[in-house]
Image 1 (cartoon, rainbow, N blue to C red):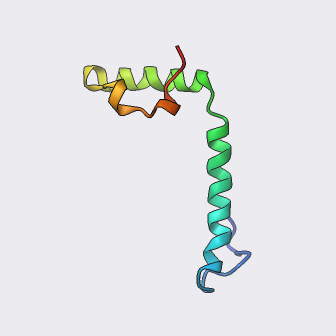
Image 2: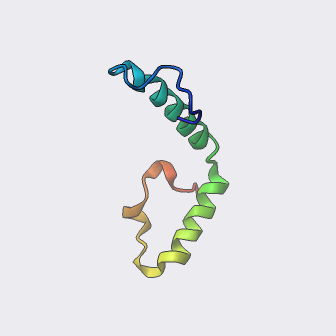
Length: 69
């Protein structure tokens, strides 16, 4: 995905995309693992600022992404 040379070429059915999927899952895991309460609070405030009264925090955000009060 990142390098032009692939570990397992994508022309090999199913197995060729497995290494790409592993890299994507690894990247997503690292991003999610760095989301703490401070980041959640900042994102929550930014959403309020951008969407104003149209932002309904009870319906718009999954509980796992809500800042702890």
